[in-house]
Image 1 (tube, rainbow, N blue to C red):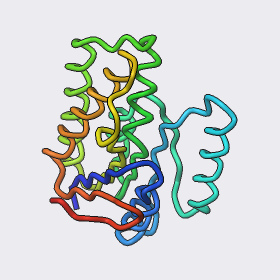
Image 2: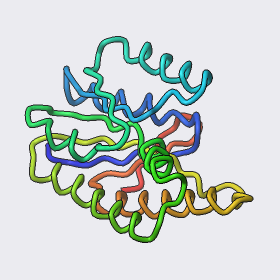
Image 3: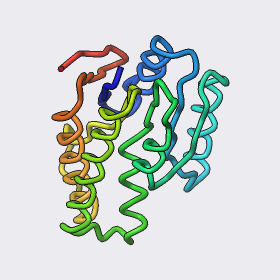
Length: 177
């Protein structure tokens, strides 16, 4: 195994379902690494919905920030679904009071490299879910623009290092790499 699979697409494009199906084809006991934080009622419902959809088929681990540390601790896992880079990055931005500096971005790039190298040195498949948010309008405020820019670069770093990359549109996966 020892592979990294990146799954990207817009909101509600079918990324999570595709990632889960992909994981279940490769393991009878995949791990689901969830990064979402219930910051409001709508997001709490969304998290609850995703939990119910997994229906006990996954062992779920919730970690909002130390994704690399958690993944590196899964020595026996065959398949891990990391859901998702978009919320992980939002958590990191929030922790820094939405002031994500150039130094923070350098640290993030090193975390991505550590994440991928750790998987390649281990014995499992990491399925990384992220949103492609660079296809829409330019955000109106500076913080949102910075977030989109950093997420776009993070997605590029992951895609360059991934063994497979899928882009989902309306539930249909396109294999890009």
